[in-house]
Image (tube, rainbow, N blue to C red; front, side, top):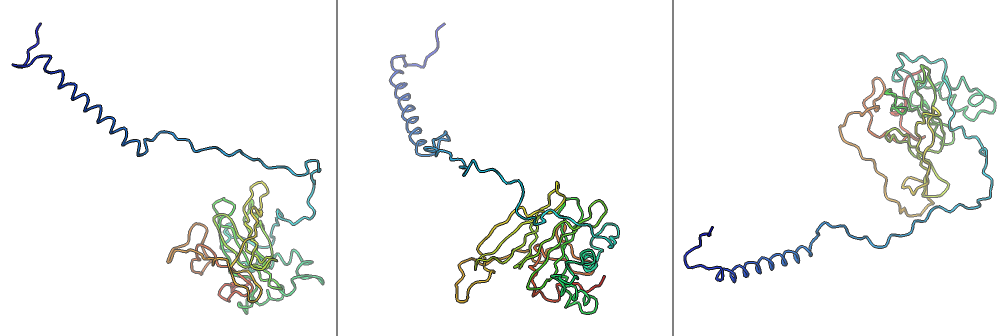
Length: 292
């Protein structure tokens, strides 16, 4: 069957025009390909030569490993605090002074014996009811360290020679238990997530020790999971030395309410997101005024 054609057209007259169209299309495609080459076509590209991985080198491989530590620092030691009632298991309803006094009674050789290191602290405990500003027990803070959904209790105790003892108490199987305890020349104490960070003076001027204590569910205690020495703007320096460390700042949200586990004790205003850095020179506002 013959196909209809336009008048005056023939197959021979259409071929040159078709060739011109095909040539123009090919040129356009070439131009597009060149233009795409200037950009990123999205293809995989080589990143160059991969450096050879170097694993750790073990020194003295024939040295037999030690079987026990040189000294027992008591990192995983816990202690049940007896003689203190916890109404409903709520540590917000317990006096921190009552807990410290119970600890003193349970450890007379440390606190009140003839060679006790902290006799001055024990004497100062007597003033917690009548003279709150002289009470060595600082304001309490609360945070859920153990992950059981209940707030644990953080207590700071001023000790002689500018030492600060830091204690954490939790309800373990219905019993009031000290799950962390340390004492040092403290620059500051901070709450960071589920960790308690203690910043202490280093023997190197201009540096500080920073130890993060974290809950360990196997030991049922808080362990020093990270211990480091860092440059510090707060650490003591020789007189006349210029600080090269940047100032340490804390970012807080103004007028923000307490977050989970950041509530204050009864009758106190909500605390900040990051607790202040208690020190031996803390003001009287940071000390509880109640007795046992």
